[in-house]
Length: 440
Length: 113
Image (cartoon, rainbow over all chains, first blue to last red; front, side, top):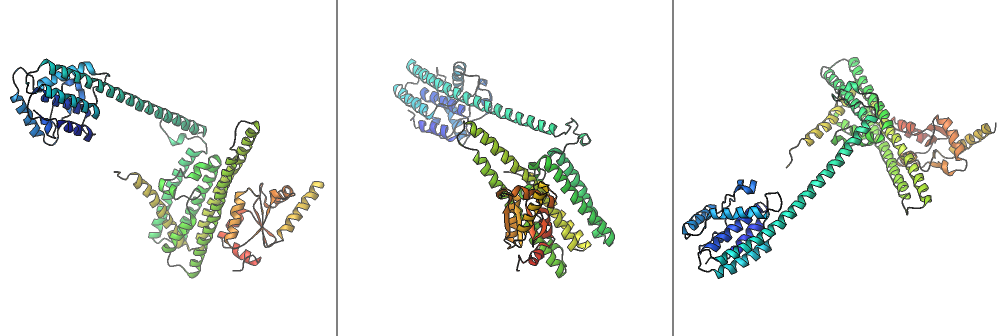
């Protein structure tokens, strides 16, 4: 009489495997059940291993999944020996089992999905208890008696019901997930539509071929991004020219004209930024037109002058004492100016917060509505000063470059501009590398 | 005529206030750029006299006078050093980066170092 330590075995199989297919476990449970009831064989249930079963095709994808695990061969051979030990008149082996499955499949599938779930552990407990009782009752009786048949049917019914419940539950979960997906897609669609609308308003002609020459006027975010890309391209070209001239030890005059060109090109981007800020100050301030790494270290919509000067100190040797003093003072001054502007921005943020908080309070009365409007108008006014701060920051950057050029010789200025360019382009490259990094 | 006189009076008042201390800043209390300029002077070790135009009963006229001086609407902050007009934020920043602000402050006796 096989002991029903198998219950432990079954439970282990149910709980240990998120990896194992629950349906396989239920079928497996059925297998065990069938084997146990039929005979007095040492059950494969005693083993912790599982058995390879091939299912009938009703179970769809399940048929492809073997219940392979440790101890399979031992179990499989056990099944073989089971078969050989069976008495006649019974259907002890896999054929019988598959017919069981067929019956099960026809009558118990509550929904269209071929996947069913295992009964809960509790159900399995119950089942197994009943099995045990049934086992005791039919002790020694190897023929399939009516009684054991009834027992089998009861248990089969119970199992079917449990599986129905489980299937229904899973179906509900799936539906919920699908609806959530639909919702988020809808949201995304709305966002895209808004973006498109905004882009159209900014006067950008959205053509299918995305040909830049079609871009019509507009100084908004998209237009600026395009202009910046063009500016950067030209800037890189100029810097390459400068590098070639430095390496070729070009004449003072040649160098100077190239350096002047680079500097006035810098002025061009500041000018463009100013125009774009009038249309969309947040776009410029947030640095959305820059690469992620640059954006991370952004200060008021651009680079930090004091930082660039710090990096130059090492690059520019030899410097005369006067030059060294000049550069140090310039760095110091720009640092102080940056701090002052930063504090101004903080004051702005605080002031804005207070204004917005001021409009909070018990709603309903008309006085509060007027108050709200007033506060919002005030907040709008404050936002207007953002453009001013951006302009001051860009002025700072521009003047830093000009002062630097004034302090240094032409050749030193050339090397300084090269160093600045290399540093910033490394930062840009870092962004690309970071985005392309292999992730776990 | 009255307006002209009024303007002169405001201008005089501005000039009078500007001469009261080495560094004088005409500001608006809610203006954050004014705050930034004040912070810069603090960092330099200077304590300017700050006149809030919105808190002065004659603030509006003074603002108009300052607009004429600076050549710009919403002129604040306007900085005077040693009684002389220096200018607004742009000017202050440019002077500082050019290393010219500190000497100016020293000259006016606002800075000792």
